[in-house]
Length: 147
Image (tube, rainbow, N blue to C red):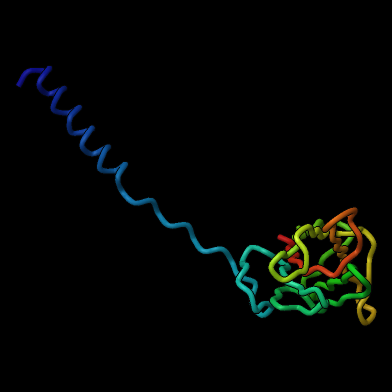
């Protein structure tokens, strides 16, 4: 065979092999580690996650020792001691839950002030409603996550 024919044959084989490799299914990623013994909710990449209703009751939780409503629109969420969180250094993600709350214009935010439940330090969450005017403190369900 000529050099040109050999070259074309080699190139066509590379194209066939390359396209077959490109069509191969990618390897599945390994599952994320799960922190065991802390949860009744599936959030494998979060240290703390909770769904708190407008009365302060924990509906779903992972890594939470306690939660309570301490005043109108004021809540305290205490992380489990086993997490060893430095509360001065965490920034939780907070979201108002609209399906479990009254009103259409609700917000929930992390307040840098600390709170306590049974002498355990926690994270203060403040919630507000803005239906029909300026925002005012109101009891609103929310979720909290600390990755």
